[in-house]
Length: 219
Image 1 (cartoon, rainbow, N blue to C red):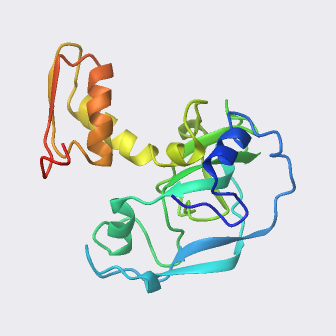
Image 2: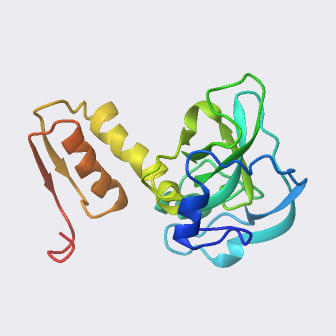
């Protein structure tokens, strides 16, 4: 996971400082920030290079639009989809856009149209389609799709969950229609998506859950 330079990477400190409501969130918001920006796109699955991303120190802090919130980033995560977007394998990004999708941080500003999210809430989200990028000191996202972090997980753990969690849930429920008593087969059970899908299947009431892995050691 990624933590901006101004935030300690010590898990115990993160855990104690950012549970549910961060009362220090009313600090003045700067006009510029440090952020990772996509410099070039291309290279395919396995040829992405560090030179395709540039770290810029004078990026304007995004302003939340109607129904959005501004998040001060405490941790962010990288997933395979990030380098597939960077490599041009998947559509949906462009040069000059932000990099990274998964984030956990504190809400410091609200856009118009109000929401159930409050300033000071510590939230986690998958900020796909904003162009904002989670590898930055601040990012913006839809208020209805940002969720308050539970007390029993750390900030880095929360940042690692959104994309894989949504993918697993969509596979099991939206596409698979899993219900109480069903049996489930999870391919790649030791992956991020697979490991969560196993646990979700159990919560959904699956009577039996089977999983595959690339080696006996992994399983």
